[in-house]
Image 1 (cartoon, rainbow, N blue to C red):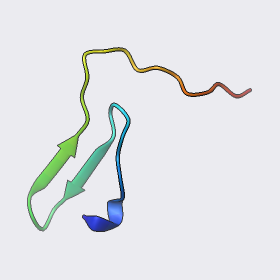
Image 2 (image 1 turned 30 degrees about the vertical axis):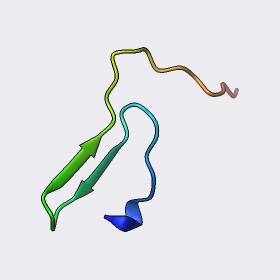
Image 3 (image 1 turned 180 degrees about the vertical axis):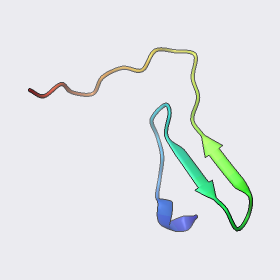
Image 4 (image 1 turned 90 degrees about the vertical axis):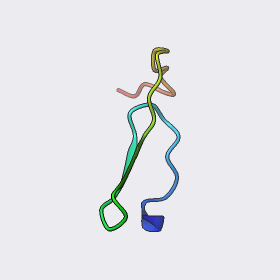
Length: 38
């Protein structure tokens, strides 16, 4: 689980199977774009 690193954006998930833990960031606010590349 420690190897997964930090999560900070809506929709990101960390799953730790040995400890039976699932963490997901959820929000009712719309996800804002950081950047758009073409």
